[in-house]
Image (cartoon, rainbow, N blue to C red; front, side, top):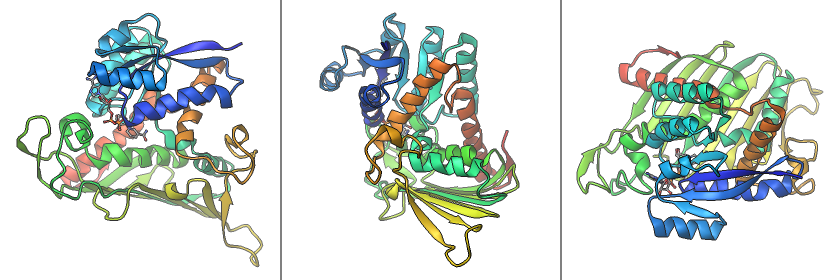
Length: 379
Ligand SMILES: NC(=O)c1ccc[n+]([C@@H]2O[C@H](COP(=O)([O-])OP(=O)(O)OC[C@H]3O[C@@H](n4cnc5c(N)ncnc54)[C@H](O)[C@@H]3O)[C@@H](O)[C@H]2O)c1
């Protein structure tokens, strides 16, 4: 018999929907879990809109003030799916109210905020997690398993990029619904905290800590109309960011992200080169992991494309039959399942706030390096 795990969802945009979908599906596909999510309350500022979301997706109730939601005693966990500048205040209030917290990435606007959030959850002793969901795409999880088995040997290179093209026009406003990512007061940074944070989290997970970085950023459109003030204002975010780094295992890293790569909507790739082999992955073909194994017989040695759908591959015993694919949304289902399993076993699922703070430290170092045009050590 499973116990209810009552969710209070704050925000009902892109991630509010992705997480809600995961809460609805996880119990059916991970039926052995002792806890089962219950859609207890959804929160948004506009009463009509949040009611429509709650009714449509099956939430039992609504709130228009997140403080009311956090104060309710019929909520076990608060899910933070709002712009980055709100993460800290909500997380600290939720920890004080003894709620578990599932927070969207990036953890915070900067390391100083993130540190306060870590201290809040650690002193309250509440379970916490950050939604770096790409770790839970089975092909990416398989990459981690192969690296941990030593199949690549010593790692030399890690290269990754995350490319989009939706802000090239100067007509795109900053601020407000849908375009808060272009407003530095809501987002903190541009592609660094939004897109590269994913690449950094995956890199730290697969290849260990980063020692230092040398970065450059560019803001191609320097003024935009602000959707809330109605005024043309300077743009404070980075439109593009490229950095190189040393990992602590002595390998070299190369990271690139932009929203000005015409033709690319969400091209997220990584490649790792080691002494014994290489791995590469591409979000556009997310069920495949490419693997070059130098220990193969030389007559048949070459890149192989592994279709990650066999039952013994990560998470795939929960879904269909070998050969049939799953998608982006399943990474969130897997993340909820791992979080709930972590509550059962007492082994917290990762990344928790403290672990996600390391990604924030790299982001801060990247922005500092771009600003100073110097190598910066990661704190
Ligand atoms: N894990 C991922 O891959 C991923 C993908 C996209 C976004 N994100 C992160 O998720 C968070 C939300 O992004 P999104 O794309 O869902 O944004 P969105 O613009 O689609 O949705 C934001 C939501 O927050 C609500 N909101 C804003 N201010 C509020 C307030 N004061 N009280 C209550 N609700 C408020 C908005 O009404 C909206 O429902 C961000 O931190 C973002 O970085 C993560």
